[in-house]
Length: 328
Image (cartoon, rainbow, N blue to C red; front, top):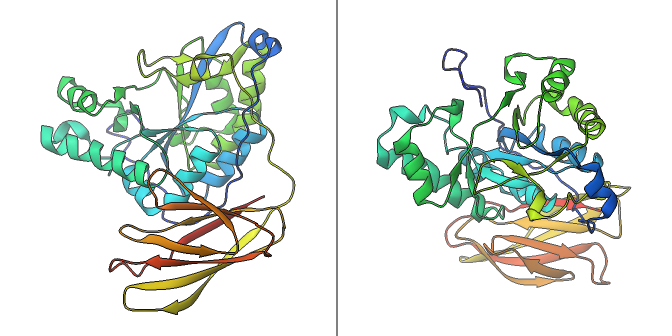
């Protein structure tokens, strides 16, 4: 978010479901290393996941062969777990931006820790991995907050260049801000603005013209470095075609219920089913399935039994229906 208290907080994205395609990382090449001869910069996007824009952001980043660091607000991650999983699946680095986006320096040390730890849990439970980076809301930090972050294994980072997208900057102005980036620097942008997403192709082109590549943020130094400590990988463009996953209720009992997902628009699909804790999927049929480390996100692929598959959820008292998405 912004560094200015006077300019106020921006509204975060509401809950929702969006599909995002998977990502395939290609092996680094000598040409990729040469393209990054001037170094690496960090493209960062705050305040997601956002039901209206996050999938468009992910698809635009992927189609331009770049990865970015996404500083998620914990309550948004908890409300949109399938989008967090989509961020990770698209090859992005998911990071911590507090749970409610408060002015952290007005909180007690215990409250600071709660804001950070709840966000860690929300992102982990949604399949986004364990964040290693924390960006304080408004860029406001002090020794107490940094100590709370360090205790959770988080490196505190802010930014070097402010795109001013939160302040109504046009796409051209956002591109101009990015043109000032130098090796190791980070630019502040946000998940929810169409102008910001529209700037991505021009930002990437401008960086390439200057021998710079989009990199990861080192949890050791807080500076942009080559992704995963190697030369800059690229991602494949989104595959052609699309699909839709539609959920329907099946039989129900006192402790569990059945659900069914029908996929349309493609025969070679990957569907994601996200259940809500303490729910657990205890049986499946008509698909090849796997789970993420949290056990809450199931990935299903066709197994020769058509485009409809089902599962049984032991609900543990939570009758919320699962979130379903699809990608080709």
